[in-house]
Image (cartoon, rainbow, N blue to C red; front, side, top):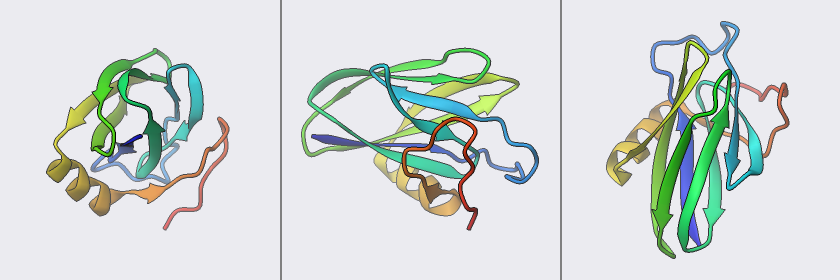
Length: 115
């Protein structure tokens, strides 16, 4: 299995200001509802997978993963559009540590506790 970290840094945005949710899916499997300053850990089998989000649009990213590898995907939601961007391990680790708290699988409209 590969490990994919999907995070929303949303730098410069106050997470308490009515954040825009984006529901995260991996291969049409519901992962949870994302918010600024949060991340999910998704385990995927070897091969090509599709990450998708649903805010007011439906953004997508295809990612080809190898077993035992870590991958980082930055998700941003701007004006109702969800944008996925794969980043290097170094960038992902740095940005994730600086911004985010881990979420369990959340249903849409659930709110996590902020750190």
